[in-house]
Image 1 (tube, helix red, strand yellow):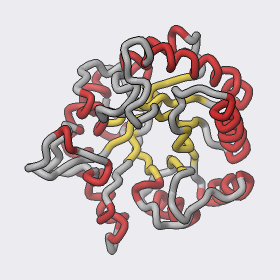
Image 2: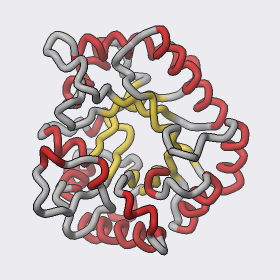
Image 3: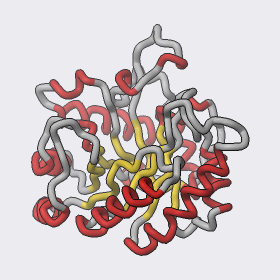
Length: 270
């Protein structure tokens, strides 16, 4: 693929201190039209969906997803109700997808639990998402405590639930590195999250969200190699910046830092 086909996006975590309208303006300043909004930002509750839709339309913004339904694979009546409310919010605000994050509390990790729990949840989510006209983006976390670390198991669960038309994978370069999984599944991927880790002394087993910065020349996660492999295999979807490090929130010019990261990635992928 040519360099110009890169489709960058911004997750609100890149600048979680910005109100939604200012976050949309940041994306437009960078020449981007695709964003992900979040329902988990401290002090930044999501506005009414009609207001989100109005702000996005005014800014020329496409809302790729809402991040996220947590512990999606611990299915219950309460989780179904939460999913229904979030799916309806997506439909009403114009978001195209809802990210589904696996439980990361040490529960449900057994060989007899991981895939069956995911199948049960996806079977329950399928009619909810189909009714709302949205996609579910299954995200496996690479942490040892996560109940669904491998995308291969997520794919198996999606297929067993008959959900290929409703569910896609989120390929997160941080979590892919931590999980140590080689398979990429580009044809099943609907979204890519990118972030880097630069601390040279940090063991992989100790990497956490707080270490995730923008992708640059000191990156240890192999972002460039992962993106090259995904694109060579046919992935042409959005590549969304999702760093979590607290120091990014006090940058004097976040647009400049993001633009530098975009240029670094473009240069290496061209």
